[in-house]
Length: 98
Image (cartoon, rainbow, N blue to C red):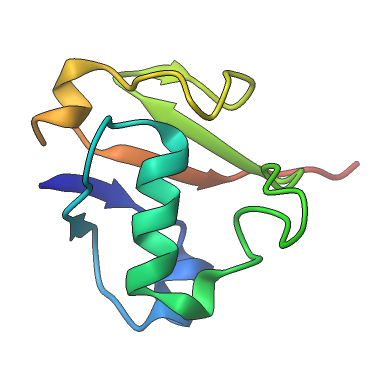
């Protein structure tokens, strides 16, 4: 089971409280986790990644084991602690403004 934390606005959209647990087949990567997340919660499609390109939206960041993985390849394997469910894969809404 992969654990995923979502920012408050996406939790509300998906009608979930706290973190979600997902079954992810195959290698555990950003892409496979996000594919599983969007399959289980279709209302999140297009909120985390662009519909056509699949690229991360500008104000969304990905963290695993205290590291910002937002600019890593979506096909890079995630750390073992994420794959085993010991640590959550964190999707964070970035803040901007002036």
